[in-house]
Image (cartoon, rainbow, N blue to C red; front, side, top):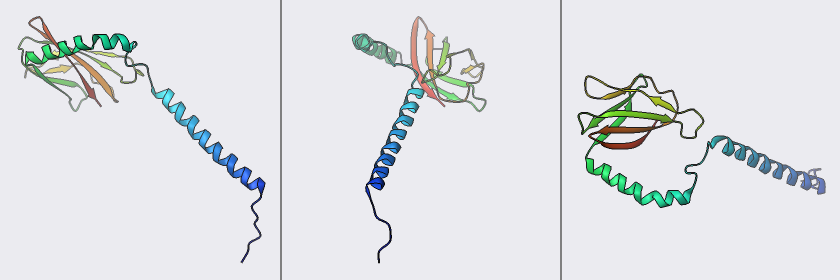
Length: 149
């Protein structure tokens, strides 16, 4: 049983043009998503960062030797709460940064609570954030970064 359809050069050309049109459209769409979702560089100069790497390792070892421990979380009202074990006279500061640089950095004001924990005075906006914490006590400092959201 034969049908009346015959594949000719125009059909084949149409198939090829349609295939490549879909491939190009998908590539353009993915490239626009990639460009729109990247907010900047991780480091401006990778050579300079590589030269400072050993210093950063030494700072990390010194920080670990302090024996201080910190655990950050978000309470139901979206306030950041830090539980700190170690120094009793600590001062805590924090900055929330959008991981892709799409939102402005937020300087969080941190207050000590009656239970000894530290709590941000304002809620963290919805979304993903990198929170850079600094704990200072006895002329020493501990710095760490936590992902929230």
